[in-house]
Image 1: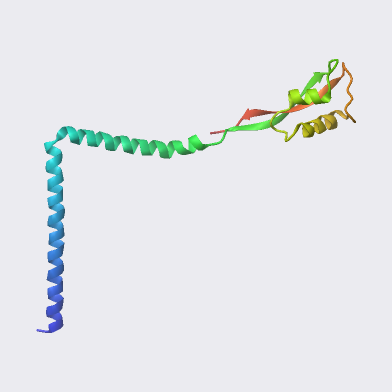
Image 2: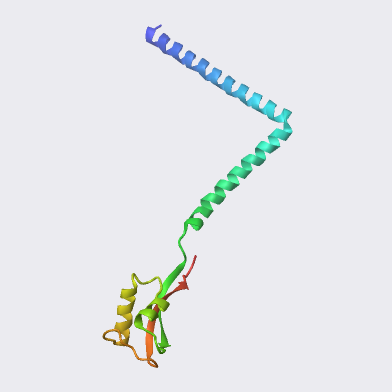
Length: 143
């Protein structure tokens, strides 16, 4: 016979032996684990419960993660209200009382009040009405 053929045959037989040994090792491991689990049913039950708990927790975290990290579903909308100026009121006091988080500063808010009401300077008269802007949250659409 050809030497190459014999060499290939020996490698094939060697690989088959390794494969059989691997199968035997895996089967003996399966047998050992199965034997251990069936001899200890309470431990097996606890292990199954723990595994199910871990799986459910993982599923919950995967689905709840985006919801827990989601930003508010509310949008802020600009609204306007009318107030009557009382004796002793100043634009600064009104701005301090009605300014909401939509404004960067009280001065920016004062500028907007002046612009809306066509006021030049800081003088206002008691008994007159001012239109005052403010931001409020409105529920978003969808989830």
